[in-house]
Structures are given as structure tokens and as C-alpha cells.
Amino acid sequence: MEKGNGPFVGLRVGAPSCVRPVGTLENAVLLARQVQDVELVFWDCPEGCNLPGQEEISGLRRLGKEAGLSYTVHLPSEARLGSVQETERLGALDQCLRWMDLCRPLEPFAWVLHLCGDERGRIPSRDGARWQDRCSRSLEALCAAAERPRDLCAETLDYDFAWAGELVEEHGLGVCLDVGHLVAGGWDVEASLKRWLDRTKVLHLHGVRRGEDHVSLSWLAPEVRRQVWSALDRDPRPRVGTLEVFTPEDLEDSLRVLAADRAPRGSRKGGEDLDFS
Image (cartoon, rainbow, N blue to C red):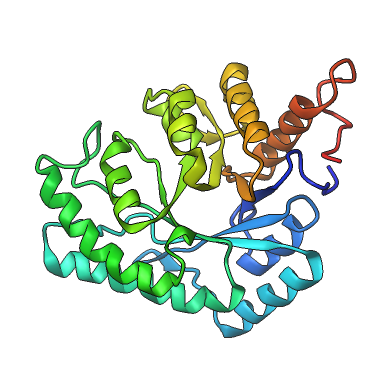
């Protein structure tokens, strides 16, 4: 599928920088033919590190200007910014700040942030107030580094987002509304859109298949997709919609689904030959 002008006014369709088993820049070059934003996904752990050097950052910056790409940067997904262990919290904060310094030359559209809970499940911590206080201390430093707090987007995870929502409002953050996470957690997508779309700079769009998320958009129920598309039509401010899948096949299928959903009524043919424009 060729890269089009976007299926919604104001929405830039994106994909992660690790769809193919090649480097970040190589992925971005290939994705530039299909999407308008690249979500930069890095890792730095004992098993390996793919953080880019200055040469690769320069290449991404050139590509962005030449191809009209924007970038969103996913900060470390396991960073425990609300950890009860102060050394762990400060280490997580330092890692996020280093990644922000590294990617600042790319002038990212948004920084996507996980406010990880102390545990998985419906609540982020058995002591929610103390968890919020620790997160708040981390967010003070991150907001200063982001310059515009609204560019720092807290992502909807497995727990009730109201816990993070209080921090979003306190610090003036943006939101990354991950629709697949909401579905996987059994949360009301339409209610979440009504509550948080005005603060949402980034949406993560993917399906959930037998409990596995981050699969093709074809596994996201049509009714849920209609709720998202209707909300975006009503509120067409600038946003990125990342098809957060991690294989070329899931990306191609997601693009076909998106194009078919947005085709004029009566012209839908399953999405095989449809474009965004």
C-alpha cells in the first residue's frame, strides 16, 4: 500500500521502528513509504541494546525532513518511575532523561511514557497515594526536560487510568490512548475516548487475539473501531495514530483494514486496493 495523506483530518498514521529485523534507520526508510510517523522503540538491557548513535540520529533527522516523517519516541517501557525503591526510581528517571537527550534533535511530536504500577492488574499499587507521589516527583523532572508537558504522553496500561489521570491533570501532561490495552483490560473504550481525547496526542491502535495484543487491527472489533473513528471525526486536532504491531504482515493488514474502514460507503472491496487519499 502506498503512503497516502491520512485517513482523518489532523491524524498522522504511524508504525513502530522495529517492524522488520533490521536497524532503526533501515526500518524508518522502509516505513516512510507507508506511514507518516515512526514510533522509535529502543531497548537497553543485558540481552542487547539498539540505542542509536549520533550518526543514526542524524540520518533519522535527514529522513524526516526529506520524507515528511514525524517521530514519536517511546521512553523505556519498564522504567519504574513510581518505584518504592528510591534507587530504582532515580535510575528509571535517569534512563528516560538520557533517551530524551539522545532524541531531542529529532524534535519528536510526542514522548510516550509508561507510568508502570508496582504490580499488574486493575490498580497500580496497594498504596496508590504513595505511588502517585513517587510518580509525581519523577514527572517534575521529565516535564522540565520535555519543555512542553503536553508532549509527554502517559499511556493507558492495564490498570484503571484514573490513577494516572490525576497525575496527567496535575502536571498538564498529554495522553497516549492505547485502544488495544483498553480492550485487553476490559475497559470501556468509548468512555475513555470521551474522557481523555481532548488530551490525547497519540493513539496506539492494534488488535487483541485470544488475549494477545499488538496484533493486526483486523482483530479489533468493528464496533470499537467505529467508536474510535467517530471520535476522531468529531475532534480533528493534530494527532499521531500508531499502528502498534511488530511484523510486516500485521502492519500491511492493519493498513488495509484502516483504508477499508475509511473508504466511501459503496466502494469497499475488502481493502485490497484502497489508499488513504
